[in-house]
Length: 195
Image 1 (cartoon, rainbow, N blue to C red):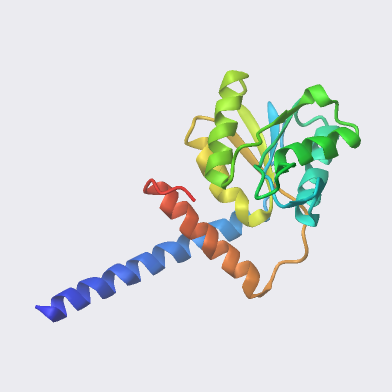
Image 2: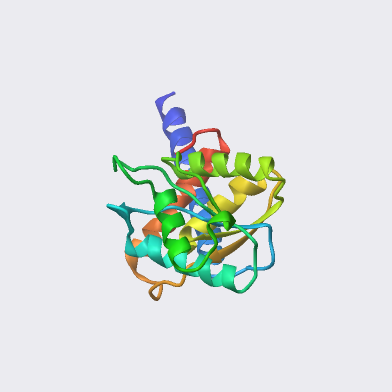
């Protein structure tokens, strides 16, 4: 009887590892594809901010969103992200200030400032888009993040196009780790566990 349980457990672990690897490969494939096209909004996923200034990762995302906005890809930009431990600033509000300082009219920027996780930010963005009757969006984030965010927004009926921020050339175990980490996050979301 113990060997049946051991074999069943081994098969379950193997099947899970295969599925995670398949999703990680799909994430890697999506990570370099720029699908930017005209949409109702550009969504910028939050990243760290330091006392009101965007981190290098957030700044790169904001610069890419700014580029898309100036190309006329969408009339609005939605910045996302909560406080992350900062008692004064949120990632979303820092993103808004940065874009406004760089020429985006304040009335064209919508801020989501409550989300502490990707899932929370995406849920809030869906609600914002529904209230504003927006149906399509370009998602700007790091390449490894696009796959999961697209699927989350698409599950709410949105048309979503990924546009990863420019980044350093791919490679290394850190990048592979990001693909696997996002694969696990995506699969957990699929079964109702939001991280």
